[in-house]
Image (cartoon, rainbow, N blue to C red):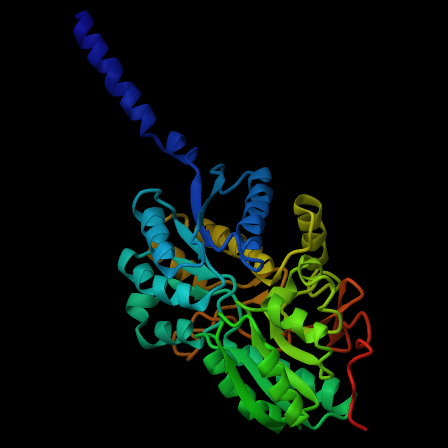
Length: 409
């Protein structure tokens, strides 16, 4: 055999070796993470995802293939998020995406998940429209999963807790709903206006404020004039400013409900302790063993990053594990096979047992809620620590309020 023929044959053999299954198996499986890394509630999304990937890789990854987290900062912009999503799918060749805690961002990404056949889950956005789109146009939108509670579900948990915490324990009768003007609060407020009265709290007023609001004085003055027993909140993009001004102005009415930024341990420092007494909703909390995974995750996150995880960190961590399980079950990174496997999820994560609702549900690909699944908690800031106050069977403390809070007799 001539030397040139030998060289050619050697080249062919090397080419086969490069393309062999063994070599292919060494390639990492990429998961894209699109988040608002400069935001209090967003920074935990890539942090927790990387933690999960490190743990999975330490155990051999998926059949020897490592999980690689490819992170993108969307700068709180839907436009930047879409660009990142396109890059993740078309250039970086990720197999699945974890995206954003902002509903407007996720709603902008959703059509692209369908167009590019890219499996996507949100760890924190709450708009009902995310799952409604899957229900209404399953064939195109089946690639989208909801890794957090929908707004209506969150409102129902807040209302259910109010029946015990506010009506029974504190004998409250009236409320004012104060929410930021955003996509996720539209269904939240609609449900508040129904479920609060049903649970014993008459709604005296419904205030929707601009996320750009900097001076809450007129709003708090108006609320004080109406003399409600409680302010029921729906705030995420705003949070620090109203909380600080609530304390500075000694507004004598408790704040209770949804305050996404309050779920982060940095919120105490960010508000210089003004959040003391604020009660907020979480799916998990660092002081409650919602599952055997909850407290260990919170402790490990704090050890690694120096603070406790916010609400979207818990879910982002779980999402990496669920994508990993789905890819392993699918035996492939084919997006349709991943979706089919993800639909069969039965996973106990940090926030509870996760099963996704079928395409026939109005919350298609949303998480099943209720006993044995995801139930939710109400947590209160007390002297620098988040303390779970509801439900009673897992509560680690009782409600306590600053001295400027006055209760009707």
